[in-house]
Image 1: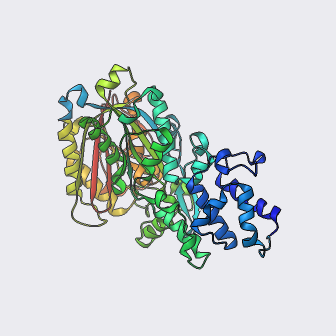
Image 2 (image 1 turned 60 degrees about the vertical axis):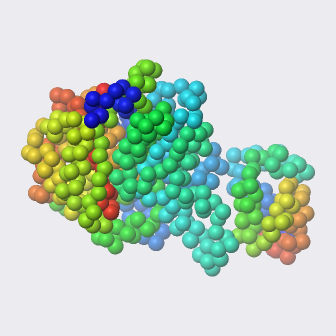
Image 3 (image 1 turned 90 degrees about the vertical axis):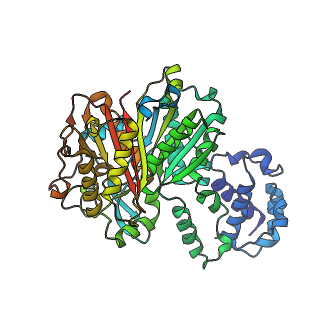
Length: 86
Length: 414
């Protein structure tokens, strides 16, 4: 997956986790928690969805990397580079 | 005896919120019961396939955001809808009610089967890899879930829990709420029962294996308690929660009172896992009458538990005969013939549909009785058409469940 495809995938996951949010105004540089109503269970949902959809395993120590869209995509790029977008 | 209690020990119903397969408000539900409108429909659930069920159609987004719906359970959603509707119906100024003094007491037949089945189905697609088992499973399946979801949704910080009481749970929730009010543990109780059971295939498969799952080409004719040609239970979902207050508090705020809890009782058969025991059922009704301080012939209407199983129907009729004799003044009806068996919600829903009889004096019928089982003959049985009484002053509501749990509540006209 390329950078923009990973971003698209994260957006898709966010849409299912936070269906009441308007994601069209999401600022990739700002922490998710500062612009969306997300709690720790929601972040676990992101981890779970990546595991289910792409078998990507994210160790607990790395959860901090999922703070914003930019940090998430940067973190996932090496883990998802060989995954072909369905 | 409750009948002679001080005003702060008398418990009254001041609000009703419900969702049934044939109505999402008390007025719509009552209208359906008086017009013979069933809520049973065709239904399909994994592994079992095509079957029948009573499904609710309330607006889930009326009181919940989509995210809350996604995170919670169906039972929680039913409970939240009913609790909010009941509060609105009570006319109480809820934003100014002390949230620490509100208690939530919700009867459930079972809870957690739906979510566990869902998760097992999910991990099946991953070769049973438990790493994809949801972190939401535990908060969804803890036994207090439906009551807890109400507190989260409504900002209630008083006590909350569920009462596991099989199919006596609707009555049990109400009794628990009343007792907590009498003990001074809360000033306002949200109490009754809910059920999400149609979303677990296990309950359908279990009843089918027991030879107790209804089948019928016409879904609306499938639930037929007391009919010779019945063939089992129609499983339904639903909820009915009451706002209970002490009479002194309700009167002080000029609340509309739907009825007063005149008597109640719960007991156990101690005789069989599934088969009922008319001796103990009769004792339960008698204990409720004693607590109310009234005689059996003062009860105008008996709302039966009968689920359309041969043994259950006949044994309950036997129990009613033991308590009420051949009284023609005591009318007897059954709500499951309209909505199926709403499990944890059954007791409270079945009572709710009869409460308007205090105002209009009409006893809704038991529908779908074409050939009355001779063993279910009762002098006051109201079949297929509503029957009017000069006055309805007392209603006795039966609710029984597996493992031999019995409950009866008696509501007095306000």
